Length: 473
Ligand SMILES: NC(=O)c1ccc[n+]([C@@H]2O[C@H](COP(=O)([O-])OP(=O)(O)OC[C@H]3O[C@@H](n4cnc5c(N)ncnc54)[C@H](OP(=O)(O)O)[C@@H]3O)[C@@H](O)[C@H]2O)c1
Image (tube, rainbow, N blue to C red; front, side, top):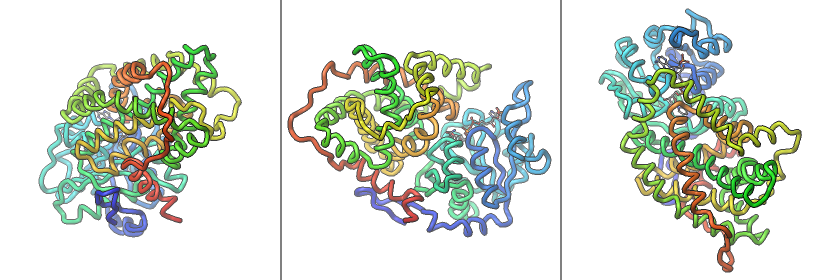
């Protein structure tokens, strides 16, 4: 269907429009070969297997001299070597009609060198990100189809939402239509892997907005605003436990769930009732204004391919995964996240009755959303993608599944190594900018402040209406 996202028309395909039966029929005689069993691989392949698609896995057995932990994971998940699990990626790809490149983005070129001459005319080369094709050095031959379904969430979230009967949404791109059936094949893949609905995009736009989002509200700036608020709370004399509850818990257990369910209107309705709307509005304005430059710099770094280059180069260094793990462990030694482990280990109700206590932090989060969304839209990204990369993925997939339960490093740690590198690099930069902009005292104007339905929240309301659970109503 064509959806009017507050003035821009975009194509969205719901489950109703592209039923599972249609997808199954398209794949009746075809095999999907998923290469890579890291984050997306297990989720996409298991969702497809559960829905009756013919699926095989290509996962290397050895990572260097060690048996790969992902090979072991594939065995634990019931894939059988020689039957539907192959350690030779070339063999796996040559057995598939659709070859899904779900190996890490950084290894795309190397994997492509291994598998490319095993592809047959008319195969579908499928991606879940724009990076391998746009910045990864892959040039597919002209006699195959090339398309993308990019889920807006980590693999564990995709699997979790599928099992709950909802579905992560995803963007789709039709890059090269050799067979004339590309559109149906790609949309069928969207159903096979268990998405909620898909919206149209290109791989070129997707790679930039995705890198921008994960270095910003999806991972880095969300962590940064919590860290900044926590330091202020401690400096004001609050004890560590209360400071964590007043900042990180407020963000992940209260503010983000309200934004996810009701958008900024839900925030402002509560703020007005509590007489705090002027605080929210003032902080929103301050943080939105203060983060314009960092957003622009980040955007330039993503669109020029600089972020992709950094991820590719660092991924190719020996021992890089251990280094990343070391960086995440170091993040855990920060006072806020150490306290987080303690609080999460306590036997307390962590839902806090969806009661907002920290109005400054609430405004700051809305400000971060405003500036990221404005940066993406002003650079020509589609409105639904801008909302997804700024709010929807965070509130629907990342926050409830990871941030609430495993904190900032847990959240970053489940994402691709490209996202991990970017988030770790940009988190301290966002924290510096946010901390410097946060005033000693937030005053705000006396003028009655209320919710104003700016474009981001108009789009948000439409996006919420497209969620599978809301489509069913
Ligand atoms: N993770 C996310 O949140 C997310 C979200 C949306 C889209 N995506 C996209 O989905 C795709 C897959 O991402 P992912 O996060 O699932 O990847 P990942 O967790 O980084 O997966 C790594 C997989 O690639 C394999 N691999 C790495 N280097 C290899 C090499 N040199 N040769 C052969 N295999 C190699 C790994 O095997 P070993 O274990 O043996 O190293 C593992 O199976 C990417 O395009 C990514 O951008 C990811």
